[in-house]
Structure formats: structure tokens, C-alpha cells
Length: 280
Image (cartoon, rainbow, N blue to C red; front, top):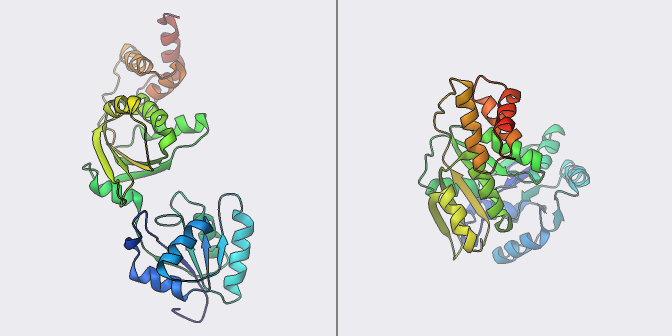
């Protein structure tokens, strides 16, 4: 390797097309003593394709602490390690970030070997603004946390990047329409694979599309950032803005909270007005 002192190498791997592996990544995987992988079965297939034989250890969401200690101990004992994920760059919405943090805290040198990234690849072909962007990763499975993330992202002017699994896409698009309104969106699926597809549309049209179409493959969602909001000058304006969100399916309390952040009026007075004007 590059010096006598052992290191942790963060190695980017293909996101779909195995031919996207870099020369440096291949040479690094050949030279290290062992490979730390999110799913050893997936990584074994890649190593077999490259005709590389290396010991594999696992590092995933459910064994992060013990695996960090075990890997760090091996590196400090003189073994070089390559950290990979199932696809793309390790540590991006990935348990590998814990490994990097732990090794850095232990004084272990960490070297990056760049490779493909689904987020950046999707952004590049989205057709949306690439000058400034905000990577949001996967939405939380916890509903309050999920809605809080969407609420915070709704006011970001930069292009937004989300990851989503096919079985959750419909619900996610519904939630995005409620919190973001109808914005431009590019749905990028199966990037670099045979069935690669980029759907450039709006959130409302995407919701309608997937009412009758079964989502397939892993998605990267690239969404237009927030355009300049018109501030509510009166309480009636704020109530009208909140009511519009309720009409899209947002709960009254969430709509009041969301509108309060973009106006000079309190959540309680907006919420009270929504309740007073409710048909329920």
C-alpha cells in the first residue's frame, strides 16, 4: 500500500454496472488485507467478477459498534482494510460513516478512493438546477420525524435529493405533494443498469402516474427547490395559506405549524382559525 502504516480505505463501487469500477479501486481491493462490507454476499459477487480473493467481514446497521472495534484493532495491528458498501460510495446514507468516525478517533489514517454516486449521477441527468443542492437521503420511517424532515426541506431553495425504495414511493410522493406543493421532479431509477430511466415531470403528475403503475427499482428523486415564498401580510393571508395545505391533505396542526414558520403569525392563532372554519 502507500506506506508501512496500515490504513482504512473508503472504496467506491459500481451502483449497477460493474464496468464502472475504477482502476484505482481494483488495485486497492487487490492490495488490502481484508474487505469490510455492508453485505458480504453482494461484495463477494463483485470480487468474483474482478477475480479478487480477500477475506470479508461485515459492517451493517445492526453490528456497527463491535465491527468498528474489531476492524480498527486489525488495522492498528498492521492490516490494511477496504470499506465498501453494496453500491456506490460508502458512508453516504450508510453505516460506513460510523466506521470512518471511529477509526479517525483512534488515529487511523482514512483514505478515500472515489467511485460512482447515485445522488450525483441522478442530479447530473435530472435537468434541474445543479449549482446548489441539498442531499436529504432516505426519509425517516418514524412519521413525526419524516414529516419534520419534509417540513424543514420545504423551505430550502436548493435542489433536493432523496433516496427511496419502490414499495414506499407512492406514499412518499403523496407526502411531498402536501409539503412541497407541485414542483418539478426527476425520478431516476435503475441508474447505469439495463432498465435505467429518468422521468422528468411534476410531483402531482408523478402521483397520478403511480396510481396505476407499479414502482420498480431503487429511486433517486431530484426535486426543484423552494421558490421565493410570498409572505402573509395579514392573519387572513396566513389562514388561507394554511387552508390550502389542508386541502392538499395535510393535517391542520401541521399546516398551522408550517405556515407559522413562513409568516409573522403564531401556530396557535392559525390553528384556532382553521378549527373555527372547519366543516367537521
